[in-house]
Length: 146
Image (cartoon, rainbow, N blue to C red):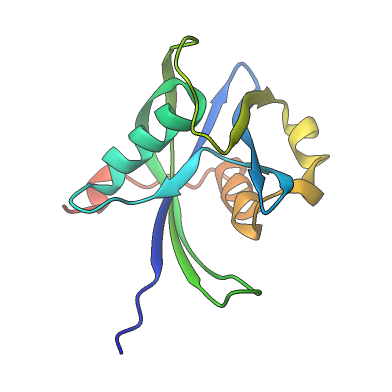
């Protein structure tokens, strides 16, 4: 059997000293995450980040750089996730758009408000991406070939 990790994308978006995040209900618990989700068949990683951000926040996202690529194994189910995290700009908001069913709300939090809620982070990847963003990690989108 060939091992296959789950490929996901995420976006760290900062605007006016606030970060765009989502509160989502996972296994009956309210969690906090960057806009994130799974890569779909035939989709580029960049297109997946744009789509997931739109679906989860109603914000149009324009990626400008890759923050990092992360590997994480879920401690309960043993599944491995490969997360490609991007940064960029929130270009336009569509407040009339319905959010994905599991999303409670999209919210903008300051760095302090975000860090105060670490107990609610969906996975360790949320903090890893955030810390790498704050450390200035930026890699060109041309790193990715489709």
